Length: 477
Image 1: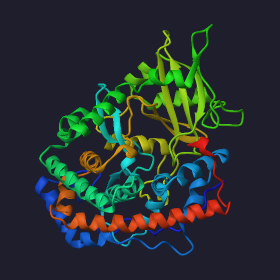
Image 2 (image 1 turned 90 degrees about the vertical axis):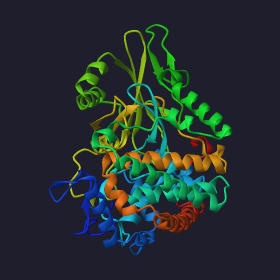
Image 3 (image 1 turned 180 degrees about the vertical axis):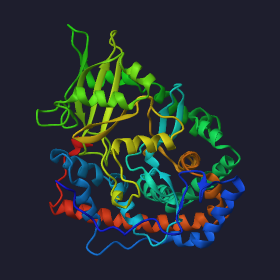
Image 4 (image 1 turned 120 degrees about the vertical axis):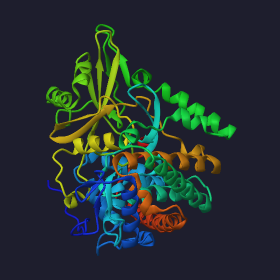
């Protein structure tokens, strides 16, 4: 069934929009000084103060309208689980429906006009640790389901707003959320400025190493927490999840997934991954670089199961596949359905494969990506990566004020590198400037949007109370 069409603006691009996906402007490569000058000129055309204004939603469009839109095509039996996870707090609601903020941002009267690859769902819980191909633990954005080419500040706005909402969620004062925004933005600009001194190749090779973040942590209490996270990440691999997710066949020695409904189960004949699995993984193999194809061939598939993941992804078709080599060494892949962005009708270039869109955005913005990152099709589009593989996120409930600020600084640093790698740091710095204006603008925006999110959450919870939205029990959390 075709997805319900929402009312969208006629276009995002205007005559004042600039494409930063290449280091060029009007057909000419930009020098550093030209890039900075271009950003400063853009600041005069579109003053930063205008970025603080929230959009007005089209008539008869509410958060529930977008929720219904986002639920189309999801597996019916999983929709109550998604609703349950979104219902926990205003922050889980914010996390669970990134399409809502993208929709609102598209309707904003003003944007910077500086378009580049962005995360699209850049909230603080989508940052964390992940493994480089050299098995070093890096820190950065680790979810790109909503990645698109759009105004760069959309990522800053979503991240800033998440600090206000999350601070309230863990009972920190509003002033802590606002100070975290300032800390994040100062870190973001400082590291953008450092990137302006580097060549594109140097930016490409640069990375945010988790061990370096640990070394720069002066607070003894925070160092202990980060050391714990670092140690935990090193142990998060295929071997670590085998006892929890699988059992071994005593005759063959191969392992198989153990059903744990409603969160993990083998597909029925009418469910995804019940058939055509061989074709799916052949297409996936073809999406990999040649050397990774050869590596992948050293494993054989022993099992596939459907698995509920995340908050916003619940209800989409997500699965895990267990592969083992001849000595039963494991490789576990995660397959996630990749759906079109809520803003896809506004894209200048039509997307051929949504899974490819996701991995291209990830490869552009991450310092290093999973060697098994790929895509395939099984009626729907999917992107594929390793399950866990040193992936780790911080526990917000564990944070006090100091830890919150420290984490905000790390997020700003990582986002700066992602934006510099995918766009042009010179132009962004020229637009942002080094004064307090952009800090005040985003603090104002984040405060307003946090209030809007709270009202949307209350509307959502009213619909739950009125039995208009079905939610699962606590076993779904």
